[in-house]
Image 1 (cartoon, helix red, strand yellow):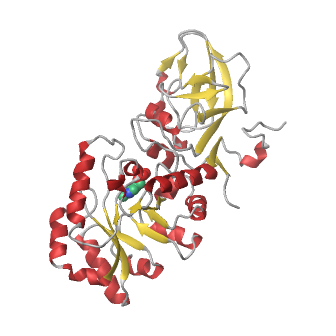
Image 2 (image 1 turned 90 degrees about the vertical axis):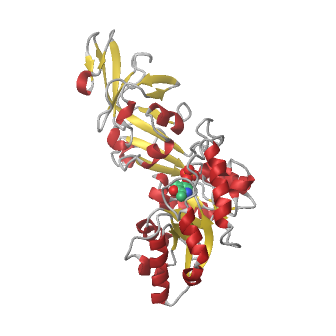
Image 3 (image 1 turned 120 degrees about the horizontal axis):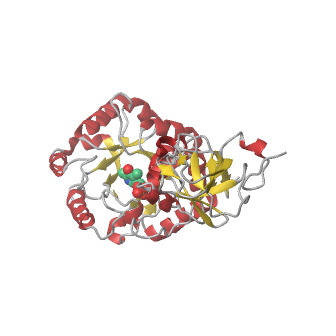
Length: 379
Ligand SMILES: *Cc1c(COP(=O)(O)O)cnc(C)c1O
């Protein structure tokens, strides 16, 4: 007997996975094009840090390159080294966290573009330029109100007053990052925009890179020369208060591994945090918090089957989840069937909300145990 799979593939082909993670590269491409059109005349880059938010940096960057993207942001140098051999020579790879001391020369040789976030990073990159005898490409980041990375206003003024060190650089962009871009009405956004204006005026004629996904939806002043979307490319909502206007990119289906009927009074799952109030039918699913389904979904979240909501009952375990299937006709769901965790009935953002987190954390935590199925990609 051959097991069922969501798309009729014989189960032997899934490598024994407990679930299928579908990644629609056509939707990814459409999202990139929609964002580019919205951002124009600004150029649109792609943030592909953390393995492209967990979806596969190689597949994602290849798809976006075909759609016209030439600017890719990663967080750390290791990600740049991984990406570099996969991409053509006409792309720019930017490193958001800048460089740790000691990695400058190798990064310079590869043509990576660090975001310089502090006087120390500026100094170290200038030293690498002196050592290699080349102008080195760089982005200069300002902290306009997030207190995370970038030159403070005082440091920016000091640099503008003695800009000698900048002569070693081919300065591509001035950059900053919004702290509250998912809340378009938050006054912190305008405050950051106005600090950005003051700081960039100190370095005239350098293009500015400011908006993340949320910023692209906040009006022309925010878009500047280059935008840096991440989550919206991957289908997540750029605005925390509204449903996502982007096409969904991922779907997730998880296999049923056991069903049972329990009498009233039976404890369910670790710690016995749920108890059957009446006779209940339960199904155990083959994915848990080690697969990125947070323990916070315990007794809160749900999955779907044939348009019917199946509540998560008891605690989420490392490798399994128990759901209440009493709402389904008896025998409707059995071993080897797949339930929807993310799909037409439950969006990525809805699942994240049930877990008390954000789509970003769900995506980047999805883990390696699913069978990944890419569709709609370039061949
Ligand atoms: C992660 C990140 C982005 C992308 O943000 P989204 O909200 O996912 O669009 C852009 N810029 C910086 C500096 C980031 O760290």
